[in-house]
Amino acid sequence: MKNNFKLQQVLKAINDHSDQNVDGVILFSTHNRYWFLEFASSDGFVLINKDGEAIYLVDARYYTAACEQVKNAKVVLLAASQNKTTLDLLKEAADELKINKALVEADYVTLETASFLKRFVNEIVPFKSAKLREIKTEQELEYLQIAADIAAKAYNWVREQNIIGLTEIEISNMISKKMLDLGAEKNSFDPIIASGPNGGNPHHHASDRKIEDGDMVTIDIGALYKGYCSDMTRSFIAGTKPNPQMQKIYDKVLESQTAGINLTSTAVTGYEVDQICRQIIDSSEYKGYFTHGTGHGVGIEVHELPNTSGGNKEKLPENAVVTVEPGIYIPNVGGVRIEDTIVVKNGQAIVLTRLAPK
Image (cartoon, rainbow, N blue to C red; front, side, top):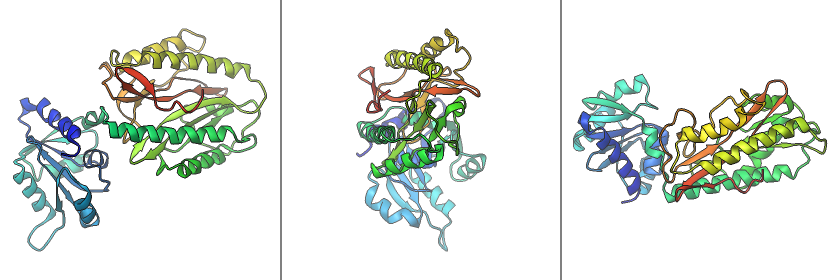
C-alpha cells in the first residue's frame, strides 16, 4: 500500500493511546491530510481505524481528482443531499470503520471544530499530531533537498548582483522571483531581508531601507517544492567597505553554528544542540544577544517538530530534518544569523542547504 510508513506512524499513535481505548484517528488539518494522502485540498476529513483502513471524505471540488490520485484511502463524496447531511455521511464513515473514540489533532483543531467532530464519534482524545511527521520518508527527503537547492541557488544568484542602493523590499522581490524561476511553487515564508541596524531585529520585515556599502545583510529565505519547505539564512557584508565590528560578530555566530551542526546526531537531544550553540555565544562578550531557540523541524510546514531548542529533551530521530540557526542581535547596531537545514541520516548530520557558501 502506498504511504505504508505514514500509515505505520498513524497506527503507532493509536497504539500509544491504547490505555484510553482509542480505535481511530481523524485528520482534519490541511497539513496532515496532505502528508498522509499526498493530495492537496483545502477541506476534507481523513478517518483511519486501528486496522489501518482509511476513508477520505471530500467535497465536489476535489472528488474527481481524489478518486484518481489517492491510493491509500477510500474516497467518499462529502456532499449533502435531500436524504443525507454531511454529518450523516461522516457518521456513516465512522460507523463503517468502527471508530467510536478517535484521536484528533490538538495542535490544529479549534474548539469549534472539536465540537463538530464530537457529533459523529462518541468521544475525541487530543494528541500532538505534528509528531506523526517528525521522521521523513526518502521521498520527502528528496523534495526537501530540491527545495533547499532552490533557495541556495537563489541566494547565490543574489550574491552575484550589485545590491548597493537597492532596498530590502527590492531584494526580497528579486529572490522570490528567482526561486519561482528555479522551480519553486512559492516562498515557504516571506523573505527576511535585514540590513545594517535592521539586523538587530531577528524577524525584521523587509523595508524601503537601501543597502549601504559595509552593511551586514541578513537574508533568510525558503522555497516550497511539492508541498515541502526549505529554510536557510546567510549573513554577509555588502560591498567593499570593511566592517570589523560586524565581522567579529559573524565569526562568533559561525563558530556557534559549526559546533551545533557537528553535534547534531541521533545520540543527542534538541536541548543539547541548543546548549552548545548558546554556550559559545554566552561565554563571549555577546552574552544575552542570542534571543531565540537554536532551531526547529522543517517539512510540510517551515516550523514543525522536532525542535533544536531548550524545550526538547528527546533524542533526534533518524531521518528528522531540523535547522541550526544561532544568531546575535544587537538593537540599533545590527545582527547576524546563519542557518542551515539538516537531515539526521545514518546517525549524523547532513546539510541540505550546503550549496550556499557561508
